[in-house]
Image 1 (cartoon, rainbow, N blue to C red):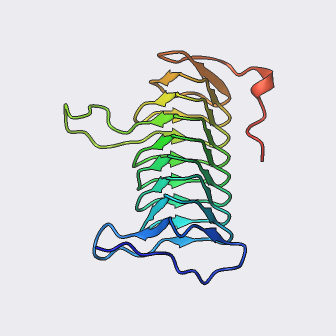
Image 2 (image 1 turned 30 degrees about the horizontal axis):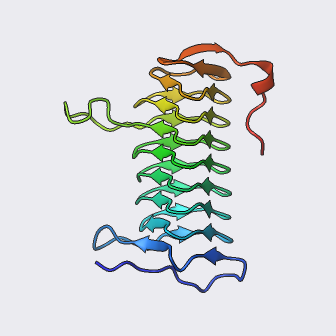
Length: 197
């Protein structure tokens, strides 16, 4: 199958690099992605077919957004971020360099993933058959650099996962998760109030 470039008949403030692929078919019946107004899509980015993205998408270089992903408005998908499809992501998401989002993940509004944060969806990689279940990150969650969130874990609204943490169990709302495996502590006052708009 040949790759298709996005239809360039958009407003003048649209910036889609000629070295980006917008509309990568993954099966014969796949449909071109739907992307809202005013995107900035940088060189090396690949957006598969059957993706729906809101207004003002901004990608870094070499971002990958796989099939059957839905993303809200004002999303930043940074350099070398991979979103492995069949995921739902809210508005005002900010995924920094190298973050990984597996299939079957749900992410709310105003969520931050720090550099090289890794979400996982397979509880027994190559050892046993299991249904894939990505994490669920509720609204206003921040995940620090190099943190790992295990399959099926829910991180509650307003929570903060510290850099390098390994989150093996659900994190209640407005909680700090720190360490490996992560323990739960009260959210410091300086981190309360959710992520900036």
